[in-house]
Amino acid sequence: MEADSYDNLVRFYEMEHAAFLDDLPLYRGYAERDEGTLLELGCGTGRLLVPLVRAGHDAIGVDCSAPMLTCARHKIASLSHKILSHTSLIQADMRDIRLGKRFSLVFIALNTFTHLLTRDDQKRALSVAAHHLSAQGRLVIDVANPLLLPALSEPLTLQGQWQDWGKGETILKFTSTHYDPASQLEELVLIYDLMDAHGHVVRSVHTFVLRHTYRREMELLLEQAGLRVETCYGSYGLDPYGAQSEQMIFVACPS
Image (cartoon, rainbow, N blue to C red; front, side, top):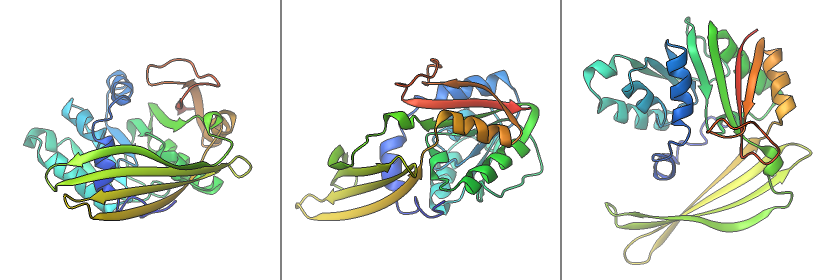
């Protein structure tokens, strides 16, 4: 896993994802069903953790990126002192951390699991998740459906445009991707062009490698970690998984 992948992307990540909360009702529902402390592995900038804590849940967030956690801490610092006492953030690798307590909900959201590039990495992370689950706890993992990945490389494509009025910049995002079904690895290139009011452009290029996992493979990995798969949803609306589903959302519990 690329420990520093997002260190230089905090601004862009927030710009694109801060308002994305389509998956929040899913995690809020499990948090309310299984009352107890929550653990998010790969919490990033606190996109999910902050609203869950604000809703009254105790939570711990773990991430390996210091800049991402700094952003999350700024968000949490703006909350009331009462809410602050219900959360903590820890810089650590999700493959190795041991916190000495159990959680009613452990979750790895929004494709974070795909940054684990080897079978060993995946097994270690799932072992960590299983180790931290309470007897009645649930693990939820959200990944993209690899059946929908393009068979051919996608050329550089404009994906979005934003205005940063504070800095007087226009930001353009371009992406290109290549997925190799044989290795299950996807090379994703993100390019951000920052154009100031005078038309000067500064380009920022970031390359990621992601490993995609198919449904039965993930179910086997979960079972090997000592977990029982309860279901696999295909959407944040909890529709059943199918070949055309955009997501694979796995829910597992201790065997």
